[in-house]
Image (tube, rainbow, N blue to C red; front, side):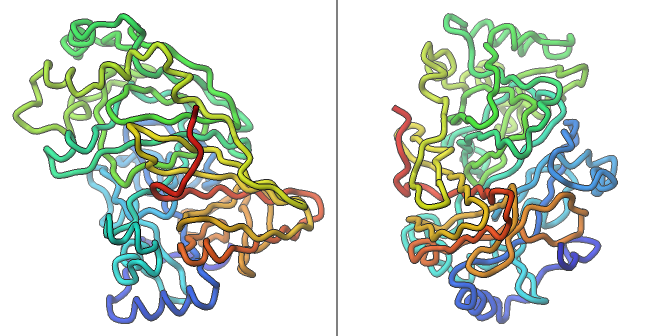
Length: 415
């Protein structure tokens, strides 16, 4: 680890003047990559799984009242929707020598030069992000609103997907299973009765669902409006640039879920409208008899050559649209390869050491809360299309990197 951040991340804000010049100069020097600082996010209602490589003394670095840090966000231009959050919580920072700026600011100033003309003209921002999501046990059965529902409160919907990297899952923690959707034959009135019983203890929503055992090295896609209760594997989670959700489970491992987490992203006048809350669910998708076949992912080889293999680990369309995708690159000891991609991406190194376009690249053993690392980069679209060179400098260990992409770069379909 090299260098460290100031004691509070909001001290990193860089003046607007000169950001474009600084960022574009760095992109030219590195042939398309920007080094990023770790971005840590706590959740007050969950128990951290302690597999993020964050130093255990820093698990509650935001304060005990904020909860433990159970997420690390990658190449994020999205603010975390946490109460009492810091001003820049959830935002990734570019590190350029002694200068710092948020990736959101860099994209705003540099536009298509970073994310490509297609994404810039359609979205005017980097519209996705990814995270490591790491908890000791399961989290509540919940869903994420779609665009139309989120727009009722001025937000965007959130499709997401999961991959369970072996490097972060030496242990499965308390419950490596995920309840997904609702059992075929479930009725809306049954779900409504669960909501009616919210303050009576366990409202029984999981009795209406089915759990799937999670397998390290595989993944899932999850559309908006579909219930899911992620299990205790550490999860790499590409998703849309939004933090909307609605909880439908009242009690998890003895911890109460407040009603405010059911309705936080619903119109205020609907906060007690149980029929409205039930109708937020996409019924056909929740009770899909082919739920697993339509959403389960196993890695597919994208390209391979002398000393490397690149695999798709997140792919497929949701509601007919490819929202995002992700690959896992493995470079054997002593090997070098050049990888070409169709779009900009966020990258994190999960194993080994080497270089990326000549810049240091390594997976740290342990990270202090304010420390800089050499394991995270953002690659511009131009840089990705020209090709990025990866070198594994180890003689014994593979170099493994995860990288996620924005929408519609042409990933495989599930079928």
